[in-house]
Length: 295
Image (cartoon, rainbow, N blue to C red):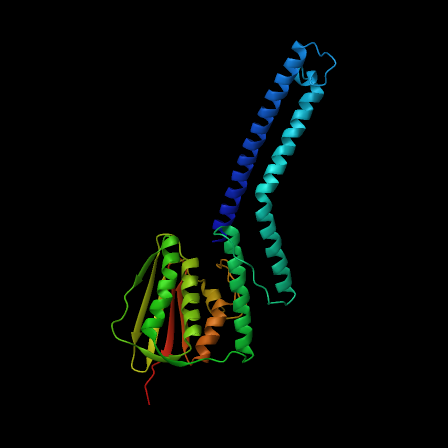
């Protein structure tokens, strides 16, 4: 994803350079043509002392003036085209400084559908994860648990991620169970868990890879499994991936808090999260929740 953002930004800069060059050339052609015509007219009318004759019979200074003018037109055009990018970069940099100073009351407006919108959305998600983790650790999040159909909750999360999975060139495999699987959980936090795990599966998968989602009920617990064919987690990193802010040697963009947050939520729901991974072959995340039995 990071390479994708860099590539899109570089492409935008190159396009703006080309566009600015074309604008500068058109302006200079217009000026040179019209000033030459005016100079020719002055020469034909015998206006030997006229300043415009300099543009009709240009010397070194006039050529230099044209060059400087062309550079000026190019610079103004390029800066105008880049102004939105520069404003966005400034806002993102300012937000990151405030976060580093401990201010998490930061929300960036997500405008458009370009690389800067992605950066703003990623930063907002990181701040939200940090806040949620802090609240969970301090006991300031009250779980609003209720009887739920785990099938419906997981299916909603899968549908939410489906468009992005397709956009990234991945294949989704999910068969919705026909029967309900009752659990007792907080629907918002459960959705957060599912989306976070699937987001990781998407980030670490290459185009053409498959993401498989399974759901089944055992005797006492229900299980959801998300399997990807991505880069996998090195063995030396696997035991630390649930640690807050830990980013392994094979990591991509992110806050380093997503799996720690998921693990905290699952613990608060009396659930479990198990991670198995093979480097170069993919990762399997298994989530377990107690089945709900009405008293």
